[in-house]
Image 1 (cartoon, rainbow, N blue to C red):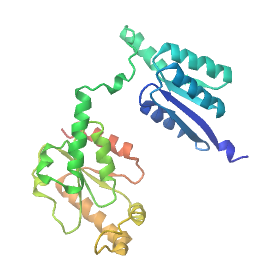
Image 2 (image 1 turned 60 degrees about the vertical axis):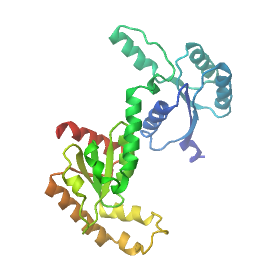
Image 3 (image 1 turned 30 degrees about the vertical axis):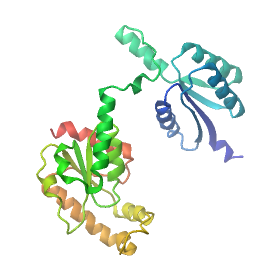
Length: 273
């Protein structure tokens, strides 16, 4: 029974993609270390029939309800039904919208999915994603001077996922592996536009991650050498010395999530420009 109390149902209802709710719900849940949310995500809920189906699901597995629904009729129906069921229900955007309206002195237009409009910012993100995928893992070095950020680091320092996360924010990001004895591309060393950042981690962390990497199809691959702590330690020393020689800032990703690493990189950009 004690273990069962550690789990709770978290219902996330949105008239759009649900990304805002998922982030909010997980950020709140992370503050309660003894509890684990069983997430139920209901995106694109835009009419009464869809909402009634969601309410039936909530009734079967009661828990906390978070929602972002701008249609006031649907929002009122959801609030009333949850109150009848005795289920806590929160409109995540309502207090934020109220603050904006008070400060700006203008009412909201209440447009469904307004944050996902196909505007210039959206297409800039698409362009950044395309650029980042084309310049992953040292590919197409001739384009490095078009990048906003270039990440360098030894294998398993989260270069690719961090690059993709930055690209989702519209930041063109390339990444290059640092391999002792292998020179970095001249195109990188001569680039003047991008912020170049080195990523490192502890020897133990990298060894652990490498242990779980599947490389069965790689010819002449020596797993023992790849995960050897002494070898990794030398790789890290080489990477740190390389970054120091070129004056590139270094971020230790050992205890950072991808989001935190990306935030640290974004914070560096205005300081170094």
